[in-house]
Image 1 (cartoon, one colour):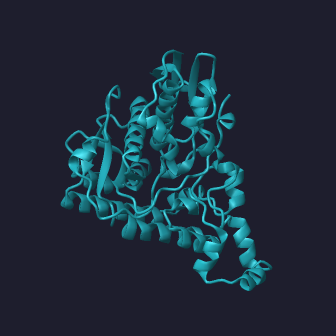
Image 2 (cartoon, rainbow, N blue to C red):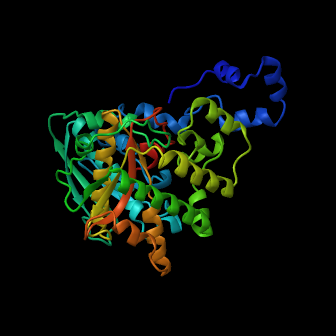
Image 3 (cartoon, rainbow, N blue to C red):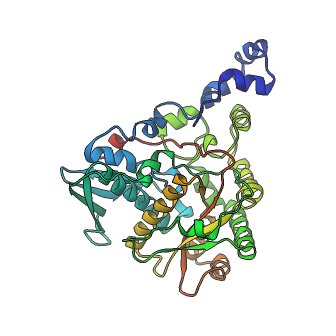
Length: 388
């Protein structure tokens, strides 16, 4: 993300040098330091975005894999790098609790990383052979990627890995034509999953209402609210220490609004819920050109969940390469799973089913559109920290 010059921010605030000197001795000065308000997206936590092409071989491919999206940026992956293969594991401790009670999103996130690993291997002259659940559904390895030497195969999707960011900001009013949406999907070699586009005004409005209602229900559920908020990193020290989670810099603000937000006192959980619900209502659903839903007939199948992640990453990288923005919005499926896990009467599943064909089950939802501003990077743990 482009760094906003200090003088530019100060002029935007209407602050002179004397004000800065005074503020620097008090709470405002501390917040500037604590949140890195004048230098967002900097430091070791963001280095993987700048160095992902540098490493050769399989460790270099893992450096690309870690830039994949994951639920709440939990990065729930571990890679075992061997001379001719990479074993992929789920880090069971990196989860969102009641927000993802069946760990579907966790496996989808690992699937996204798996797709990056495949693309990066090919670009480095390592032709991959992917096996899902090589030790069975209960085995430790969720995938293994054996490689053999081959001619390097660069691709637009590989080139887009370093530019792909979840964009939570507003989208323009420009529509995305149906043929453009269809062109975002390449499910070659990915059985059992597909993408349902919801772009026509009436069903799009129905899904928007469903997303807002699901966000409100999640915020009203204290356990889900707490599990949701646990991955928020309010200050730069937290970001640099954990190198994961959700940040103010990833909320899609413009430079001025971001600087103001960072200078204000850290938000409470209830304030964060209120903000998210407002953004869902006034920005996310209000500016979505279309929604995509990755669907399957077998939503509980771990191999299908991993495959869904690979498809999601292909869609996101293709959108990035074509100048479109994508924003993951999974609160409906999170509420569906929460109701199921709690034994509650289903309220969201029947409403979502009306927007899909018989036999289709939603695994995840996202919105697409033309961005008002580029998405910002989120912190990442380096390849050396997630390999064994």
